[in-house]
Length: 330
Image 1 (cartoon, rainbow, N blue to C red):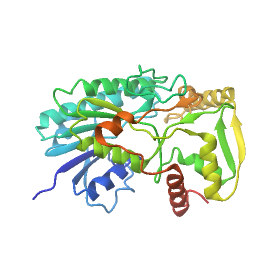
Image 2 (image 1 turned 30 degrees about the vertical axis):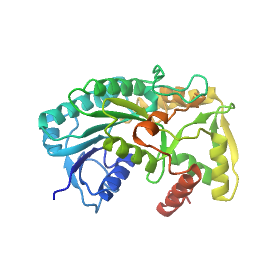
Image 3 (image 1 turned 120 degrees about the vertical axis):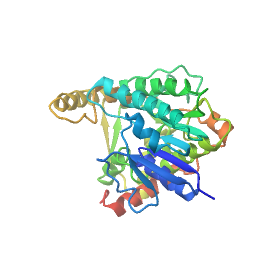
């Protein structure tokens, strides 16, 4: 009996590579759509089919998704020097992939898109927001992800589509949230603003489990869900966990909001002379100074049995141990 085919875009990245591992363990034949310039270190040696295809090239994508039962669209643009770059990638390329999936005639059971909580915006009052919350994205990236959602759901009569809004994600192979742990290892606990900030935070294994469960469920077609930790965390709580795992405390370094905006403005200015977009810019700063990036996973728990399986203590411990092994933390 031949294996069912699952296609993953962004398969070489942090979340995508972990999803590939999960799909292989579940017995799927996995096709990974990558670029010729992609770093494949997390995919090397795995029993997968690598496909060099441009996400804006429909003809290449039609061939790539041929025979697929599941498509997981994980790729996207989180940094761009041009505002329209976010929309060209996150919306335009998604449309091309949706059209390719339809025109391929593949027996698709679910087309799952990795969305972002930035499409909804922060909580206005500190209470975890749910899917009935009126979206209020603060950045161009967030607005592009909201437009992506709307586009995907507009295809629900043509394809069984599902969007999962992901929160801040950490874990092995991460280079974004991982910077916090690297800094703590140097005995610096960095924090933005003096007030208490809360966050929904998920280990990558839980995110991948949510993507997989949503794909396999009959209830998720045409729906948007928040994937989220069942508990809301403060940065002080995260710092306490780090203190326990590292066995040492750290000097708390608080950056006032005005300082975050100042550094962002400087970084954005100098990036104008570079071919690369700044990691921190004024829009990213606006995200960082918000008090409550918290969401509720209740709908996902009800519809497809999502649960947070990796506690923050276990997840951070695993992440730090892996980072030490890789030499990312000394």
